[in-house]
Image 1 (cartoon, helix red, strand yellow):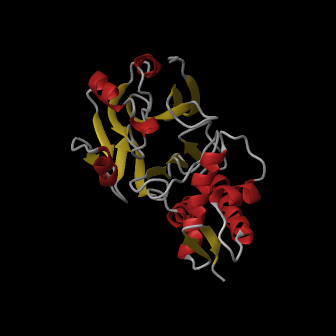
Image 2: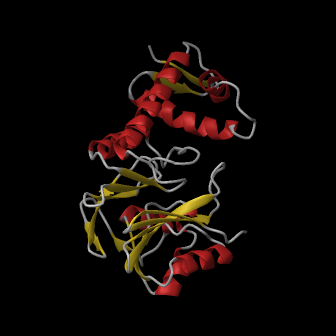
Amino acid sequence: MSGAVARERVSAHIERIAVPSPTLPPATTTNAWVLGQDDVMVVDPGCPWPDGQAALLAALDGRRVRSVLLTHHHPDHVGGLDALLEQTGAAAYAHPLTAAALGRDDLRPVVEGDVLHVDGVEWQALHTPGHAVGHLCLWSAAASAVVAGDMVAGEGTIILAPPDADLAAFMAGLARLAALEPTWALPAHGPALRPGGDVFRMNLAHRAARTEALAAALAPHPQAPSALVAQVYGPLPPAVVPLAEVQLHAHLRFLVDAGEALEGPLGWARAR
């Protein structure tokens, strides 16, 4: 795999280094967010390949990596963790549910409300389950920025895959992040986004509209997910259809919990 990285300087204390990762297309990289100037924290070193890991280390330009934080446990966010720890001697942090999902006992726990001090800037941990049970975001009022992990995407889209994902929790997290009115939303894939409050609201509105379209497509008789995908999404490239079915499943579970849909052996139907 290529070891090339893309870089974006957001502020004196925030830099994006996009490293190759085994993520979902059209994205081909995961952002390693570097917080701080001299003594830094790296968020989500996702590259599992040695050349990409070496490129990340080179892009750090000799800065001292004091800590590494995982937003969640998915492979495209953790693939370079061990290599970076070995290269830097940094301490690693994650939500306890992320540590459990990875089967690791060497990750220092970070939970809702914890404040991490990084090179003179405070970052508050926000537990935002929905995409993954242990998903964390980081919020800095001083930087007016949210390290958003997989709550939003600057490239591609965020897949919610049950049973780990929960649409209601995901939407609650988006609403919470929007209320902070950050200038910057710093996603795990693609460039930094601004204004952050509007970005989170736009994504929340998109999820709500998709749910409404699905509710309207439900019929009194059961329909297979593939039939519902065709109605809700329209024509899709064949390679994308399985991902759309996974995504629709999260919306269907949301409608079941709301009493608006029924799941049976033949598919999904309108509850009333």
